[in-house]
Length: 381
Figure 1 (cartoon, rainbow, N blue to C red):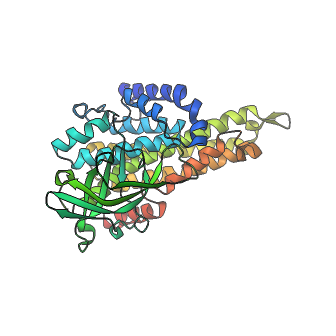
Figure 2: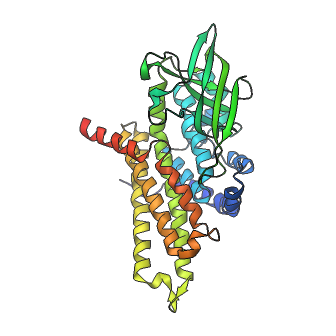
Figure 3: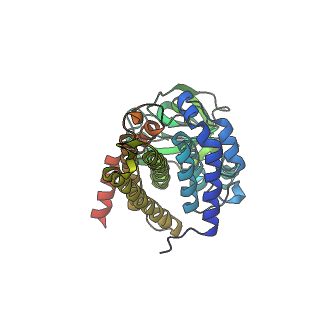
């Protein structure tokens, strides 16, 4: 196994890192404070090809491998956790749904502007009573001539209030359980009945609007159906499986930011006549923080490697997301501890890293669900 980055991967990392240091880090606190969608940064990322990293160039993407994509998400998230979610939800979820399950006409019409960053995407699966329990969703899509009529609502939809293209899951056969769920491309500006009910006030992940959506007699043409009727549940699982690699990447980026800030502070803050980093207890904290980050990165790239090879990576992506999300929160917590009282104030970004890290343990599969998935994989094989 080659642990070294290729020349192209190194170039991608350096390019995104430079962009993050120059454009994202200086405004990260402002994004966190205002919680406004950072449209200018999204436009800049589109120009750099960062809104369609893993998609083929023929569809407007950058044609990067999944290692490079994960590296890009890690770097973006190092600057802003919210911006990392914007890109991950847009690419891994909304864009990937069209890429994997759309026909050529749908890819040309909807994936190309998503991959080029001209449009923003969202993935509408969760509902108030159907988070981890997807088959409990109540949103329906009834065939009416050459249209589907969608009624219901979705909750916790990243990018939901700013998206140009939303992949929506609904029951086309309410009596068929998970085999009765289908997916559709919805265009909020074109389709009457698409309503943004609310955007959530969240602990962290600021800058990425998390919306409550309602569909009121929303009519979409039948050519917006992705794949065949009844395939939506399997499509969602496959999409989330790949998305978990990028949540691991987001987790890593936040953990790195927390670690770098803590290490710098430990070298500058003096107590008892010496930098606190000279004390063994602080050295041990930093050693553990870095070790966890390195281990999480290996799990992430192992899952990405299996995905690239076309091998089964359900267990690998679940382990990568589970471990990276939990160590992200642990590293951010230790970062606050190293900062002492200052870590609990907004004078330093340590507290922001902690707030942003916590989300990783919840969305795209809670830690509890992922442990079930991993256990099932272990017992079934």
